[in-house]
Length: 463
Image (cartoon, rainbow, N blue to C red; front, side, top):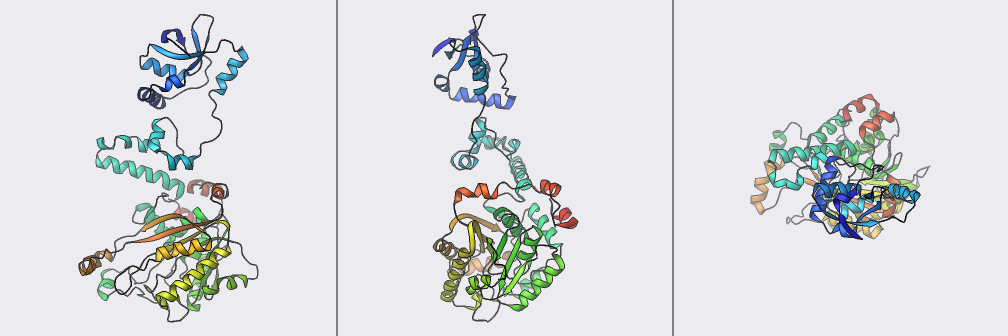
């Protein structure tokens, strides 16, 4: 390596690589901040017929160095190469061999640094991050606009942004939820009203409250599309209402739901006949403590590709007085039965598949949390599934606004307005990318696939 006068070095007219203004300025900035990089990676040149050094490798760096008004630059002279070798190097030096491991980059590197250094990140609207590196110079309304652009970009790709907080109050979530409800799903049918034991005052405060929880169809949709392969079979050991089965049918997945109460199953089956045209959900009346036996009793034993369920939150809602109903058991009995059901579920689950549990914690009579989240995690670990993702389902304040002051003043308890989404994986984590691939955006999906959604869901659910 030697240092030569920059005036004696010229760009290669055959250079096939170009660099746009934005990336060029990032290159200039990176050399300015890290000049020693040039000594470790000098330009590769050869002596041309006019006596000047012509660049084989580093044309864009030469342009940046001229902009920075360098006078001397480090070079390696390759005059011994043949014309064929020079031409080959000119191309090979501009070819990127291999692929970026985007997961590792996202986990181990700062995204903003990567972009500043000129790396183009997939699925990221660069304009949305334009000011994030200078956040102190941005007005609050501009920050909100930037974040909204990021959310919109990710929502187009994944239905909702794949962050660890699912904010059900957002417009994109509410519009999609309304579209699902417009199909006619009535998941509360088959259960008693006011299972949450709201007071008459709270019930009268809203015409929409029944006091019985209804599962969110958008949460079903994203869970199925993210964590279950197309045409896969979903097993739900705590079926409850109809929503999880109906959504599975509409997004092209098979569903098997188990529930103790025959009246609930009958209500679900009636909904299915009215709303579903294909992938009809299958419901079984039975006790999930005998889960393996129940599944083995099916004529064509299914291959379970996903577990998706929402168990009873201890006795928060008591569905029946049956001694087989977890919601009617003592805490000790609940824990034992719950662990057994999770163990059987994971045994039935195919390798390289996900189990998703929607859970919320509840307090005992002394106001102490019973740690249903922790019990769910430990039971999965014992059964051989790793704890892979955790998310918060953030719900609207609703009746919490009426109850919060009384609850807090009565014992400094925070009023809970979220549930937990716990995602587990059985198998080799390295196989996830290959097996599940990339998410197809909703627009592309509706253009390329004539699915069983039908016109109504296509028009109303597609956002």
